[in-house]
Image 1 (tube, rainbow, N blue to C red):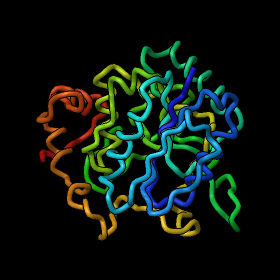
Image 2: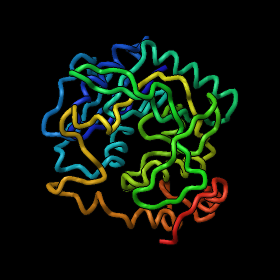
Image 3: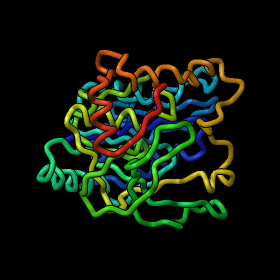
Length: 287
C-alpha cells in the first residue's frame, strides 16, 4: 500500500531534514512516494531516495505562483498511489509513523465513511542547531465555529478527543486515501489566506469528514522560532522581487468562489457555502 507524500517548500532551511526524517523513520520505505516541490535558488540533495520513489520539482523562487499552485503540482506527480499525506516542509516524524498512521486511518474508517485525518501538529524548536520537542507537545485542532472569514483572521486552537469530527483541514498535516485527491484536487488559484478554508468546504461538499488525530506522529516547526533557522518565506508578505506577485495576491478569485461563481471541479455552489456557514455559525462578509 503506497503513500504519496506531498511536500512543498519556499526558501526552506528545513526541507532536507523533513524529507530525511519521514524517509528514515518509516517502517516501509519502499511504499513511500515523495512528491517535492522546492521553490528556491538552491535545492538540497535528496539522492538517498530511490529515483522511482521521488518526483523532485525544482522551481526558482521568483517564478512561483504560491502555495496552492505548488501543492496542485505535487498532487499530480504520481498517478498510482493508495494513500495521500500532505505535510509542510518544516516537520519531523516519529519512528514507524507510516504503520501507525494507516492504523489510525482504519480506525477512523469504522466511524466515518470518508475520513480525512488532520491536526494542528505538536511543536519542535531549534536551539543551538538542535531540534527539541515543545513547548507544545500535543496535537491541537483548528476551530472555525462562530468565526468570520476576513483577511488576517485565523481559526482558534482547541483540544478535541481523538478521532472526533472537526471543522477545519490543516494544510500542514492531512491524511486520507486516494479518493480525497481524486474528488478534492488542490485548486492552484486559491491564495494562502483562503487555502485551508476553501479546501475544507470543498471536502465537506463531497462527503468527507475532517477527523482530529490527537496522537503526535509528527512535529511542526512554527513561526515563533523561524528567525533561528534563517530566511524562510512568509506568505503573508510575499517578496517584492516576485515576478508573479499580482497573481499570488489576487483576492478576487476566492471571493468569486465563495459567491458560488466558480464552476467545475474547484467550484462551490452558493447552497454549499451557505450550508457550511450555517452548520458552523461561520460568517462570510458579502464580497
